[in-house]
Length: 121
Picture 1 (cartoon, helix red, strand yellow):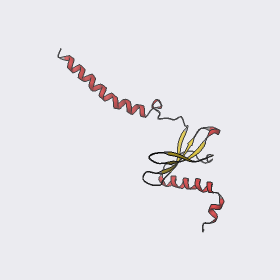
Picture 2 (cartoon, one colour):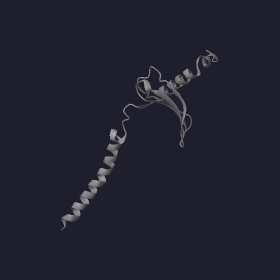
Picture 3 (cartoon, rainbow, N blue to C red):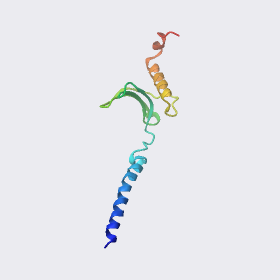
């Protein structure tokens, strides 16, 4: 009879240890939604304030690929623009300077050649 409380206590401890382990594994496996199968990736991010930013994400595959320019706040996500993806985007940009530069290039292309004409060299 004295082994019964120890056995129950060990099972309880094992279950308590397995809960965070299971959550960690679920977060990092395709079953938990960690892998989107290449259907969506982040292209650029531009922070506007501590709680607001503009994101460019690529959705879809093949001929169905589109870039979405999204305005993100703590309360909402708004689609600001939808466009064809650029040809030279093989991988998302990781560095903070590269992200801002690529986003500026995308916005420059959207504004067209007239936007660069009013700048001094």
